[in-house]
Amino acid sequence: MANYILSCCSTADITKEHFEARSIPYVCFHFALNGNEYTDDLGVSMDFEEFYGEMAKGADTRTSQVNVSEYVDFFTPFLEKGLDIVHVSLSSGLSGTVNSARNAALIAMERFPERKIYVVDSLCASSGYGLLMDMAADKRDGGMGAEELVSWIEENKLKIHHWFFSTDLSSYVRGGRISKTAAVFGGMLDICPLLHMDGTGHLVPVAKVRTKKKVIREIVKRMEENGENGLDYSGKCYISQSACREDAEAVAALIEERFPKLNGKVEINWVGTTIGAHTGPGTVALFFVGGPREL
Image (tube, rainbow, N blue to C red; front, side, top):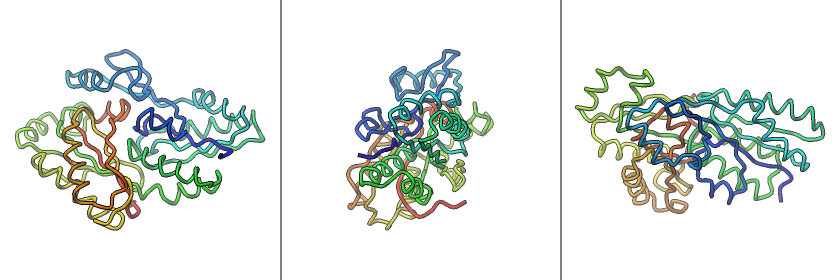
């Protein structure tokens, strides 16, 4: 058994049961819906269907990251048990939470000078972040030590590819990313934006694909082009979705057909409330292992 804890944030968007099965404790972000505060605790405080249902009605949402004090409180029980910590944070390209974690680690290690806390910027998000954590847990369970695991994560985190498409442009309007006029024309033309995450952990628009059917084929094509060993890809594949399960299942079915050596079936998760507060309903995100993402 490892003499350290491997932990992350709830924004890794895999299920509570999955985290528990892999012995990965997580610290929770926060969100507000129509002025009411909630914890982003993987659907416990608020069911995902209710959350996205309210967003579809035009609910006001905002999010807040884990603060320094919360991180100190999260780290302390493990340090009291004599355990070191490898904490992997949500991408710095999307949130400043990694800085809060690093500041909290300095405070906590002053209290427990014999212990070590390693904070790693994942440069990943949603179930791509979850996929990285799952792979790191495999290394931990295989006997890899804390420092070696940190090095492995740093060397491999940019191999986690993130591809997203959206069939609902309303959240793009609320977030100021497109104008109302552009959204109206986009809706009339059935345009689905395709995005990916670059090597700095930022989301970057790639293409505007007309029709859902075409964007589903396009996102699978991106896995064919970028996945490790192409159509012989033999790693795991995760998908996250925000109240569009049928679209996610269509992508998963096509992937399982195209990649016969896949490691198990495609795992479909919810886009969590923190990420979902910005993407809104109608988003499908695909995650797999490939060559290093470009800076």
